Structure formats: C-alpha cells, structure tokens
Length: 243
Image (cartoon, rainbow, N blue to C red; front, side):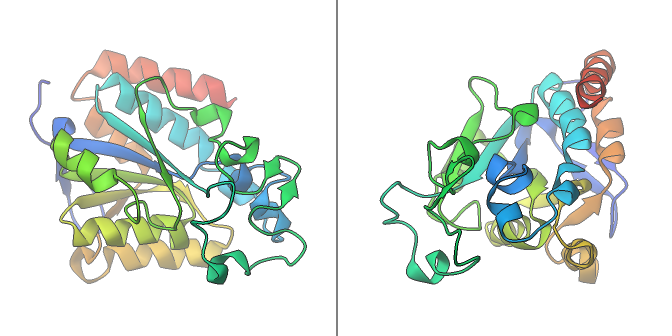
C-alpha cells in the first residue's frame, strides 16, 4: 500500500490507522432488524430510520474491499433450540412476537432463517468473515477477538445497527481489548433519533473515551490515498446500487 498510516478528521480529534491492520466491522445488518416484517418492526419501530444507513454503508463497504482491507460481518441470533438465549432476553419484547417465534421471515433471530441473514445490499463476499453472536456485543461468546489477533488487527471501522445497543456494546468491548475504534456516524443507525445523537456523543466524549466518530465521507477520502482509482470506482458502484 502506498501509505502505511492514514489520518482523517474526526471527533474528538484526528483518527490515524494502518489499512493493513484495520478491519471494517458491519454489525447486524440483518433482515430481522432493517426490513419490514422483521423483528424490529414487530416491536413498533420505524425500520426506515435504519435503512438510511444502507446507501452510505454500501459505498464504505465497496471502497474498503477495493483497498484490500479486512471486512467482518456480524449477525445476532440463536440456535434453533434457544439453549443460548437466556430467559431474561427471551421474555422481553412484544408478547405476541418473541425470539424463536415464527414471523414473516421465518423464526425470529434463529440462525439459518431468512430473517436472520444479512440484507442483500450488504451481502458478504466469499471469504469474508461472518460472526454469529448470541448477545449484543460482537465479542461476547464469539471468536472475534482471536480472529482479529491472528490477523494483526489493531483498529476497527465500526458500522451497523443499532447505535445505542449492539454498536455501543461492541465498541465498549473493543475498547477494553485495546482496539482503536472509528464509528462512522452516517453508517450506524437507531430506531430513536435521540438515542442516535446521544450514543455518538458518548463515544467521543472526554477525549474519545470509547473511540472516534466521523462521517463516512472523511473515511472514504482517506482511503483514496491507498488506491484512488479503485476506491473511486468502488464508491461509484455503491452509489449506483443504492439508486
């Protein structure tokens, strides 16, 4: 790569990373959360707020792939017999539509069901890591930390849903394990606008207590230093898919 380290403007200050030691983390961009008829909508949420992150995230994903960086996807869900879903989690939510119940997209948040999988717009490519996690955090009861250590990853570009739940939990877990996290503000989403604003502010507060926050445009501009032609072509393809 032409640049060992790239730097971009962020809150609370510049974020610097080595592309070869950085992974893009896409958290839980699953049909059950972001499509109509899924678990998120059954709880009375407006999934349109989460779908707003798909177009900018398509550009980020395409550019990251073009730059030859590591890409990791996560999916929250459970075994078919629910043995990895504690009662405290199972018994929450809409009483008529719980985890494991049959919904329009199959059994809700059950591994292997249609609704559990990642949306078509952000589908993993062959060879990209997909982490199946039973909890909110990406590190809890998964092999993520070990995989990152083997790959020599020290920084994470964090995207996905929802900002105040799975994204926040994952960033806090990553911070405790020594990873530097950049959260792309327009590539994470919440069902609640006030939670989105507060969640992002909490990450960058007190000098970046959990990490850094920036718009995806700043990340894409920094990546263009790696391979301007490839990144430009990739983001153009991302924009065309989103229209």
